[in-house]
Image (cartoon, rainbow, N blue to C red; front, top):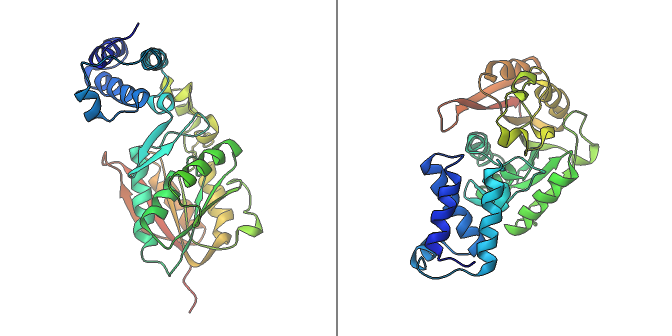
Length: 291
């Protein structure tokens, strides 16, 4: 049964009110309708009295069912925006979140002051959101996206191609829990949003995260700090003298992460907060630059 665009939106919003508040239900219905129709919000509004095709109506019904079942909107539409970049996502990667803009901004700010053509590593890259944000803002940066998951790297490669950054951004499989392979060479800056959810927190994750997002990218050991210890210990050897390491961390983990950094010869340069005024990222320097 075909429907007008306005009715498709209203029916979707009404169905989503079973699980969402009115504002969120409206946003999700609107975003889904734009996605399945290939129209902008303005075009959907202008065409509100027109009848959508049967294919669009069926796609809306399927999308709403998935949303009501708890699947995140990003996975349903297959994309999400981060730092002005529209990124492909699927269930092999975490959905980029606004919290991560804090570490991306910190990395970009430092990268702009590095030597010409700096080498930057985005470790535990997932979609590649941080490294691609850096590459899009620092026009001479050469960025390597690294992850242990081949499926995640396939997503990152697609995003590199989409944003036409293949000349400066590459992908490599690497384990953050082991010493970096020698072929990686040395970097001016390493940035990472590693898994940092504690054992206790894993039991309390919301359904949309627990049932759909990859646990490999979430669980950071019982205290949530396992990856920080390993990355700081192992990947400091992949930094040039005076190189920088930039981390995202979970709420309340800042002091512990900074202690790990200091114990491994790093000096803390800056700590910063996310949009919610929660401390979320740190920039640290390893040793001093050689003359």
